[in-house]
Length: 97
Image (tube, rainbow, N blue to C red; front, side):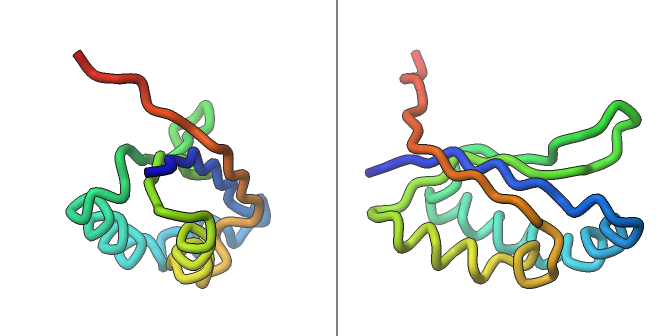
């Protein structure tokens, strides 16, 4: 199944951290379901030098790109206007020994 690396950057305006916190519980619930379904292989926050969350990255699996796009469109960080720039790359996880 195709894998994708998603790198998503939060807004940089003064309200960005508040938007992230407001959407965080719903976003984490969505991620937990994706982990349980086997769609999310890895994920987490991108941090600045002070340890503040400024974005996210994850490796996900979807049968086709349209499914990935539908997930992104419904993710609470997109709906909540947290992620302002999202890059998606085709990806292949290295085999684990």
